[in-house]
Image (cartoon, rainbow over all chains, first blue to last red):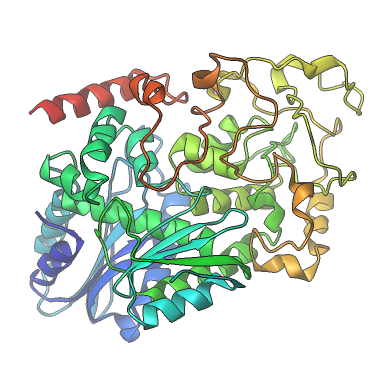
Length: 126
Length: 384
């Protein structure tokens, strides 16, 4: 049975993964972390992650008017890395996002995105 | 041995986790709650102000109430409820862990943010859910302090966290934009429900509810709780007039005789105009409202329960209180309450009374076929 820790271990097997965490984006708190974090601070990274998700969720520019057209991924690229955020949709109330930090040279954005989609789905489906 | 004392709950928690003890840290007071520790690490926390794992899973429709109850019946005595749900295929391990983590941090905020309370440590006690997650106590402590600060950044008025939520009669500006959660709260706020009631009703985390309410207060969309003029306890909770039924031009000063009859609770979701007219008739001045929170006494800035005022002034409406209101409801009215049957306080792990467990009442805020479909789907999944 894949639990939270297993999910993060799997995320670290994505080519180029440097660190991964699951973040509660209401409070900006990392509920589970593994590997490295930008500036070696998972909590600060989580708070930043939450800000980004909140911004994308609340600014009308990104919010779709179509029902159930919800936010899925957020991808931020920097010169040195990729930061991928995948919303974990649970039926019960939780506001969680799976965050993976990839090395730019070793990482492949398309592969990583597919894998994260699978991981986030596996976490909550039987 | 059980140590009872008045202390900051966080300090005793640090002590027992430092000694790698196992047991339950029971904090009394408002709202109170308990933190369960297993060999020095937190496995669960619960508080009346925060929906627990069962409430989150059933009110969202993820689990049928029957499924949850049968897992409780099977696993309570052996503290394996969580494992049973996963083994029977009702939940994935991931879902269970995420749900428990969320509920634990949520309840921990309410239990541990009180600066001082009567704290009991019951060694050896464990929670019926079983040890699903193991959380470092220091991380919880840090997070609780951070959450307190976050709320004050939004809108520093802790009374909002406990007082009944009253949407303003008139929006303070021409155009307002709300998030889905804020809309949910405004639609279901009927002038009586406290933030805790709303969290339970909607199956949302207690802290997230408070956070949205503080944002709504900052927007000027809910009335700011006023300190009661009379310090006497409230014996009868008069029904608040509901928006649509009351002319907005009604003069202030509720005629005390008029609305005394306990009106049958109406699901607020069906109410076209959720804004009740309570103590104002003029559209509220947002600038005036904004000015008010600058005045509260400094002692309040710690958290929702930090007010040093006498507890009686809170009255039955002041807290997300699980106890029934002072006026007993008519017999047979148990299941038609505001959100769910108001039960007497149970011990952790105690079963629901039989009649209530049998007549499993659906959450009132449904009303779409979607919820029904979801329940059918869950039931089918359970049969597989």
